[in-house]
Image (tube, rainbow, N blue to C red; front, side, top):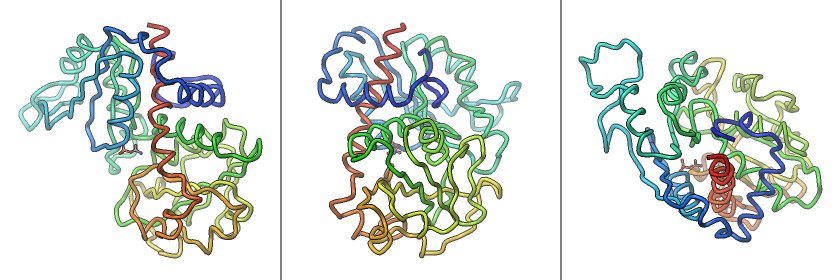
Length: 315
Ligand code: CP
């Protein structure tokens, strides 16, 4: 594997999740693989988990790491070809990315969607501008449409906690006060569609994900029905794809609470974090024994390490 951009960058998702589980049991087995190599992590947006877990993963493999908060630590970057740069952007991606590429053996990039320009976002404009102008592998640390490091972590966590070979996994939309990207649900859906699970998505009308990501998932408009016999409940808010970037529903009845969790097969509760308590999920659920959100976030390190290991092995 050269670049890790989405589920399509790898073959067998289950095999990579298993590799991440094995790395977790012996994290320093490959501590010299990345010796004298540097990963530059470029952030255009905020992060807690991705920032720390990916650095830690690279360091476990012997790499040096540098974090660059683009636009705050560095010059504002221009991404448009042919731009007349008489505004707030001082450095073009053509020079900026090419220069970073000389200091790095692997680059990580986080760049969220605009949520106003659907074509730009769904063409992965910023990610592709980086790809065009660098000469080293790129790791997607959440882009306009997907968050594959999170999805690999999610699959790894499901495998760790599953009590049957083919668990029922339910992705449920939940309310939020802000318009959020579709990256996490898009990505989760495309990974679950390739995994050995029974996968169900439940969301209110108008929140259907792009079919490219939702694929063969079973859809259930009734959240209560969807929860029945579930082994894992994965909650996430996202803004509308069809009415792009809009909030169409704020119904608090979609929040995950204990009453709904009681319908499940003693399901584990998952969320990628950060999460707004008592908006997305009730305290009684996220604080319960069935909540595995902390273990899930912990697994970000091992998932990132599995990905970086595969890239380093091909360098
Ligand atoms: N889940 C996740 O990507 O968290 P951060 O945005 O804090 O990195």
